[in-house]
Image 1 (cartoon, helix red, strand yellow):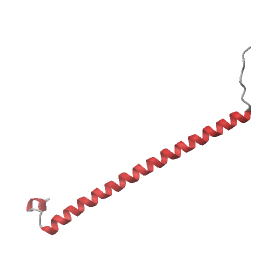
Image 2 (cartoon, rainbow, N blue to C red):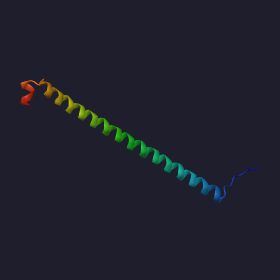
Image 3 (cartoon, rainbow, N blue to C red):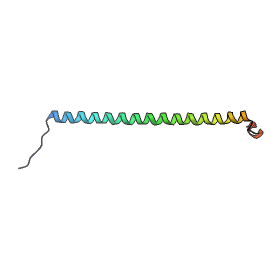
Image 4 (spheres, one colour):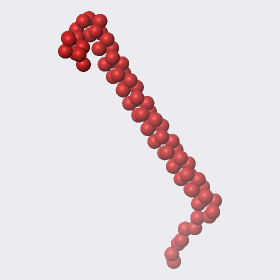
Length: 72
């Protein structure tokens, strides 16, 4: 005698709902991670840009740029 397992509609519906909930949670996690990565890259880029500007400004204040640099 072979046993067959039957899932009633409630079980299947519950499983589908759980699957949908897990997929939505996964999408949200990925979306949040991407946003954080983009924000971090943006902040690092801004810090580097400020650092470059500060370095040039400091060199100008100290008179460290040569005429070669000033011509550029």
